[in-house]
Image 1: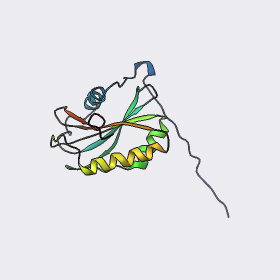
Image 2: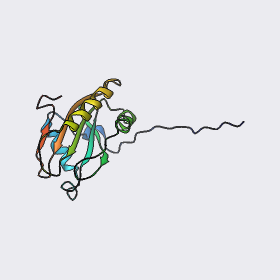
Image 3: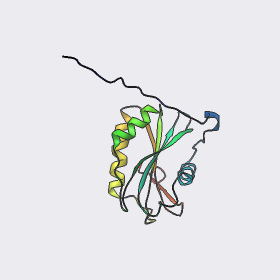
Image 4: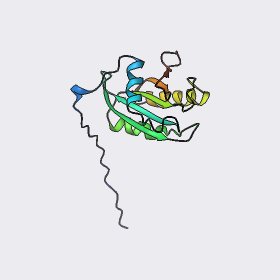
Length: 149
């Protein structure tokens, strides 16, 4: 019997030097950065879920679009999220998704996925700093500012 396996290589390539990385000091900083990196042609059409990957100084290593869904929801696979966080050697994350309707209220599903991600991240000493809901106008709701996180 001839057993063959693939060799797995994990890598992270950053094109922007860390001295130029944006620093997140408050929820407004994160909301502005997310909104700048959102496709304005689709923000009113369907939900997307994004993640800011941060270093220990809360500097942004990158923005990950984790999923893109339908009009009223998008699928979030916690395993794919954590794979990206671990692969990028990030120590903290900020989540965001948009509400095409413009509603600035966290649904029960929003709260449940946030807690699920927070609990999973704890196993790897990854801090979930916030979860933002972004509207097409650029307004936002912060789970941390509202005391949910």
